[in-house]
Amino acid sequence: MRAAVDIAAAAARPRQIPIELDAAADLPAVRVDAIQVEQVVLNLLLNAIEATTLPARGTITVSTARYGADAVEVCVRDRGIGIDPTVADRIFEPFLTTKPNGLGMGLAISRSIVAAHGGQIWAMPETPRGTVFRFTLPTAAAAPGDIQNR
Image (cartoon, rainbow, N blue to C red):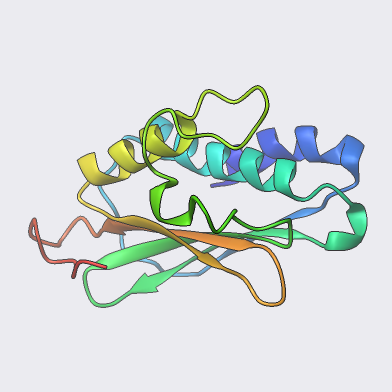
């Protein structure tokens, strides 16, 4: 998480958007490819930076927590423009983009990485504005399929 936050912070600094990491202590171990999970977090952070166009919109937060008995959850929360409701149910589809120069692959790749690690990823609107992306990763001790589907 720290590496992704550090990389994204360099992109957020010129826009004066602070990024905070709120990592829970004593989380159980997860068995993951660290570079792939870093890529998921970095993609979510870069999307959050693009959505948070004004410094007054607040801080982007990355947090970790337990998710039930057998998983860890990672959240990326922003106070940006939110997800266009006309595409909200399809945001993880390949080639779907709302950005003028976007390829529409970042969220699709992120979903594939999380799924390959036995987790799930989803997005929800944040109140009063913004979006929170959440994904789960099973603990190293969890058996495959232990995380309940969302």
